Length: 69
View 1: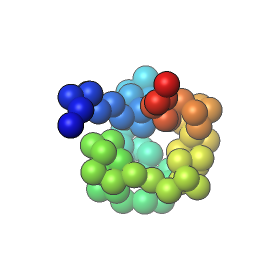
View 2: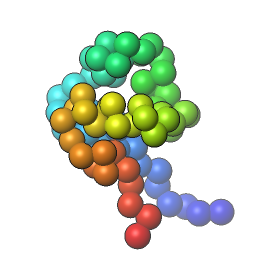
View 3: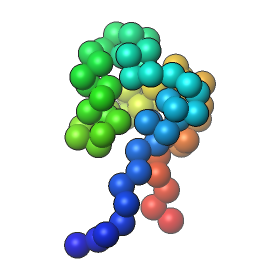
View 4: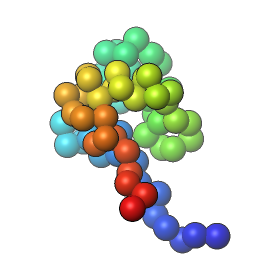
């Protein structure tokens, strides 16, 4: 088992952009609970939703992913 720290880029980019889960939920017409689950790694967005998140946050979709290399 790995002791690697889990990092969440959606949560980090929201903080960098000074936006809240509630703001993103409203922009995506989704529940705050769903966005919260993404930010705590309880659940992951679909690929399509990930692209929409990137669009709303005005970042490249790759900025929302943690590189494996």
